[in-house]
Length: 266
Image (tube, rainbow, N blue to C red; front, side, top):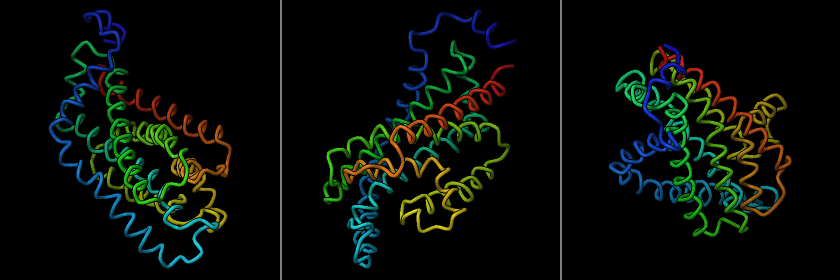
């Protein structure tokens, strides 16, 4: 039976049918948020002390005339958004297909595939926003934020999170083993975090690696976040950055929708 035929045979959907899916994930998170609440504040504190204060103490001239702590914080904010987005889009998605079968149960309810996908993605973006907001708050208390434009990092990291989470959803929904998820972290996420301008300027890389860094969504998020927290213009145009991240988001969402339909529509 096609998805359209199934939809005609179901009861009427809620006005925003993805909201019940989001509510389902929030209800589960309500029972587990305390476990991550402490780390949401402890991690940025340790990171600022280790990288910003510890390593920064050896960088006498800073980076581009900016204190190393102030320079690295926006990169860490963007990197945190990517790590949370990937973490919430790999094993949680894979398990709902392979182990606990939650998606199949939801598809038996009056929900479309797009509602299941959109509702779960909305929860991932909620997690990204909460984690990066906590990071931004802690680093602001450390005096590492130099501009009120730093608040603009919040919508930026949401778009960055979507640009990373959507294609990861597609990937996690088609792999046959969770070993492939570990490979994604090892060969894509970790190198991207190391070479996308988080810890040192991309301009110091060789030409080929530099253009690979420019191709990653993380570098565009880092450049926008760094411009916002420092109160300077980004290296590329703001519109160019946003369109690039939006392209990753749309392409990833389309791929994820196609993969979800193949698994859930029979």
